[in-house]
Structures are given as structure tokens and as C-alpha cells.
Length: 153
Image (spheres, rainbow, N blue to C red):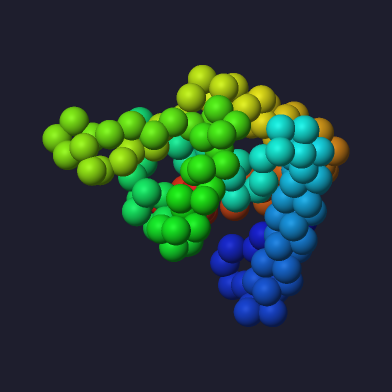
């Protein structure tokens, strides 16, 4: 699959976008199915895992930060954090300047889970990419560059 660049008709762009959407859905489904089996072992849901992934790249997040990133209410974010805290993946700490402010940070156990899952995802993607022909690989690279230039990725 090769994305056309100049002089491309709207129909051709839509066809390319449809093929790319199929690729994204296929790879996402493959990764999610593998994640599902692994996460079920630790009783972690997908939203909880996504929260752990956010936390792994931040020093901490407040409850309102979590709610905003997850697209949930603060009450729903509190529920996610409660469960992860009981499992030992996150901890709550009070802000030094205002003890009423609660910050959530990932624990070493949470970091290890996210790291393990990232490795699994990378392995799955490597298998998928290894099976691509040259045009398909070129399309993935072109898409990666386009997303970076738009600050999406």
C-alpha cells in the first residue's frame, strides 16, 4: 500500500486512509488481545492500564489531571486510582505546599507492569512489521512522519 502525494484525487486519498484505518484496527486488535490476557492476570482493566501508562511518563498527576486525561469525572478517576492503589501499582501523596492536594504517582510495581506491556506491544508490532512488503512499510513510515509533523504522535 502506497500513499499518493501529489495530484491525488479525493477518492484515492480516502482509499489510502481506509487501508491505513484497517492497518491501525488490525494492529490495535492484535495488541489489545495480547494485553487482555496479560492484564487479566493482574486484574487490571484497560482504562487502569492506560492510566498507568500516563503515570509512567509523569512524576505525578493530580486527580483533576487524571480525570482530564482519561476523559472521566473526578469521581470516576478516584475509582480507577483506588483500585490501582489496592493492587500496589500507584500511591497517593500529599502536596508539600497544600496537604489537601492529592497527587498520584506510579510505584515500582506499576512501572514494571507498564514496561512489560510495552515490550509485549513492541514485540507484536515487530512481528506485524516484519511481514509487510516494501510498499506497506513505506506507508507506515510516511504516516509516522506525517503524524510527527502534526504533533499527533
